Image 1 (cartoon, one colour):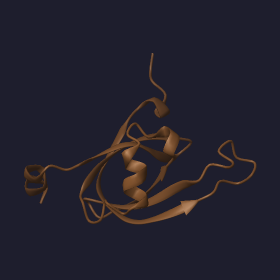
Image 2 (cartoon, rainbow, N blue to C red):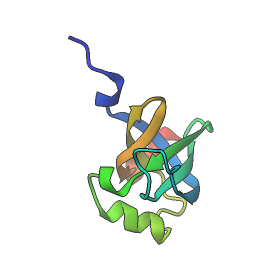
Image 3 (cartoon, one colour):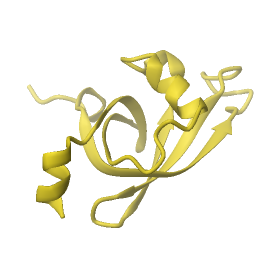
Image 4 (cartoon, rainbow, N blue to C red):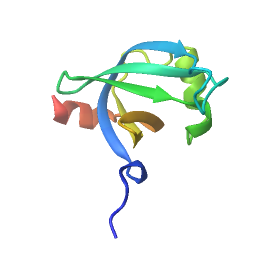
Length: 104
């Protein structure tokens, strides 16, 4: 049996370019829950938008790091799920120094 696309964890390598705090429409199942939209620039220079819902994060400190901009210019690995073509963040890791050197 094959897995559905929302069951996979997708990985993206890049840095956060900007963040926007957003509120879903009143008819959305997420109505009343604020979330962030992160625009990331991947290591191959393509841009991607990732949604961040506090309730869907594996590590609650990520929400605080986003609020306080503690991610600035740090290369990260973003672990995301895909629901209806939208990627939402589950977790992230800072790319270790030796991997940064290998990827450049």
